[in-house]
Structure formats: structure tokens, C-alpha cells
Image (cartoon, rainbow, N blue to C red; front, top):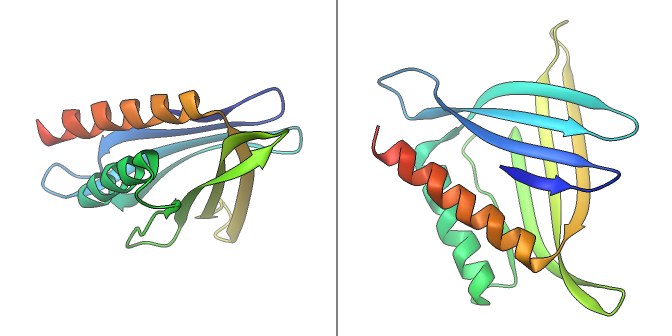
Length: 139
């Protein structure tokens, strides 16, 4: 699912199935593209119950029950935070993304990306996340 897609930045968060058939760890394909960096990384850094909590938390955020939502994944390698802010006198949703991953040479690299999106893009993200979660629950 596309989290950020504008002229300057692209961030995709794709649930790519389970790491192992009898496990609850999910492979997350992360694609990032900016003018300075481009990478694609498959990382088993999220469990199925994390996606359920994420859907529930983002629904509360959408409905105004909470003013921000931050993921609480067991593995801290991937973090997402959503909150409202004003931009050009309009309310937008700010997304903060952070990914810590091991490189091919066994070193750790931290990447961060921040961007704002309109509310209708956020609602599409939530819709796609619900679809993906429901597919996983049927496997």
C-alpha cells in the first residue's frame, strides 16, 4: 500500500505474506524513493497482531478518538506515526516513517522519512490495510 506518493517522495509498505507457514511474523516489503536515496527491503519485522492493532489504532485516529497514532511493533525496527497538522491553512495528516535495517555488509542503517498527505489519501491507506489484514486472517 502506498503511504506517501508525491513528486519528491515515495513510501510503500507491502505485506508480503508470512515469514514461515506456521508463524505469525509477516514479511514487510518496504520501498523508499527520494531524490537522495532509493531502497527496497524485505523485512520480517511485524507480527499479525501488530497489523490488527494498527488497523484499530488508525480507525480511532480517523474517527477523532485519539489525536495521533504511533505503531507499537514488538521489533522496533519499523515505526510509523500519524498525526494532524496545519499546512497552508488546511488540515493534513503527517506521516513519520523510521526503518532500521541491516545492510549487505552486516552494518545497521537507519532511514527516516516525513511527509504530509491529505485526509482522503489516509482513508485509502486505512481501507487497503483493512483489505490486507482480512486476507491474512483467511490464510
